[in-house]
Image 1 (spheres, one colour):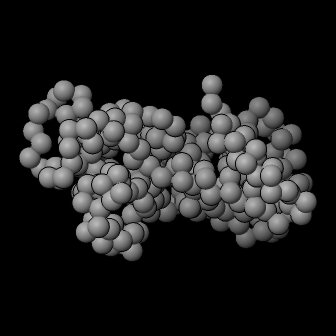
Image 2 (image 1 turned 30 degrees about the vertical axis):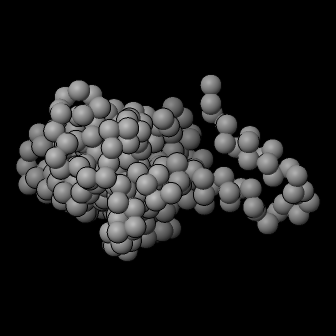
Length: 282
């Protein structure tokens, strides 16, 4: 049944890349692709690295509003029409970029509220005040939103279920075009990171060629695996390029096998799985 395995999807961790190369010896038809959404997140991390002042603002504002009901109440009183500052998590795809976009949209209101707080109560308030008044902050926020918002938007789009391969690849191409248009040193560094991520994903190049064949844009099959048949190629029409569904399955099984289920009967597991797997289907 080794010929039935056509796609191996994983993250870009070195050990997974090495694993993919080893498995290719057993599964000759298999195409190893690393998660595209994870690649976009790595590019977004490059954005975070280029704008340290914005990163300090986001992390410190997050700290002094977190677990402080009194400060949250001050925020809600003076800015009732805007949401609370986001709490980005570095390991969650695109959350830092979304936080930067939030500060770009509500910069004036955030500054006014932070100024109302006493710096003596927390070091994070003092650091936030110091960085918010820097001259580069406004221009940096505008630059991030104008040039890199496409990264967080595309990560969200790639998380859709049952997306055709051609549509997924089109999203990546649009990201590449927009990042290439970003001017300045920071934009070039981010684009270079994106190019590096794409070049390391050799399986994605194969899927691009297969997608062109499926779409009738090309008839060149020279660079594909010799063992791949014409019938095999048709199965790639809805090939995923992200590991989002795998991440979702972890959450489902974690919820299913939680320690709190002390009276969960075995005969109900099948019914529970059917409900979980069909949630969201029309």
